Length: 359
Image (cartoon, rainbow, N blue to C red):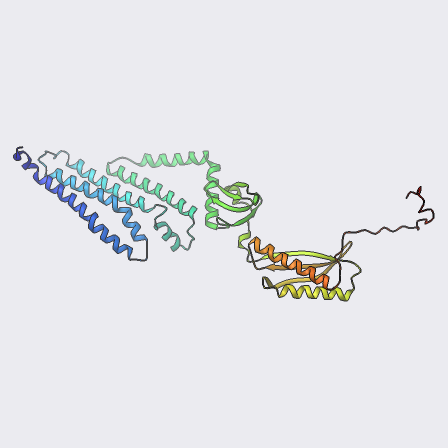
């Protein structure tokens, strides 16, 4: 092989080899060293920043190496230097936006840091919305800068975006209403995933909040899909936000209950409830409330300190059993639904024992 042929290419090959070696050194030693330093910090953002720009930086080194080698190669590229310079600038812009695009990933810490600095809770749906919107803006900006670099007139493109956006908005009015309704739900935070909510459209546990609708699992294990545009206009009761659960009911004692025993029974029930360890003692009502159709009605109202249903129903059962014990202790009776009939004239007693007698 004639080495004289390769001699003019030697500077180009050496500079290309130099850049390839620089690329290898950067990623085998320098980048790994920087990653080790970043791992020692308390923040994850620096690690994610390095990962976002790692591949774009590697590609950029390779492009600069090829560009430098072409300038040193025994080729007549004087007519192409402007084109090559423009290609290098184009790829540099592309690599920059490539890194920014990677940084706006949902798993990166950038969006979470921005939301935290604004005092907002990092919600999964909100992070997804911001990430998608950010990436669309990044792609649009990259396309605009690249078009400008190549001297393309982008005014028509911007005008087309405006007209196209108007046509799209008119065609997708309902979908956009659902999206904006979802944004309102995410920002206002009337409920979160896992909350027990009640609306005019249904009641159950929130399982998913998407751009179009909210999915609620009912207590009968059905699934309700409520459009966000409709849900954002409805009154929403978030039962998961309650601090305690209310119990309110009446018990009825028979009308032959002596007044002194009635008072003692009411007092003992109130004492039992107010001293119960799982009942809020600040809001208890045990009062003789009403003369019922067939009973003397006692109103009982209290708040269980537990929000979950299993503990709530357990406390309610315990109180009900203790009320039965108190009523039994005072030798009183619960009233049963009954009715008394009164006749204006007494029924004839004669012949009542006759087998042919009929009322």
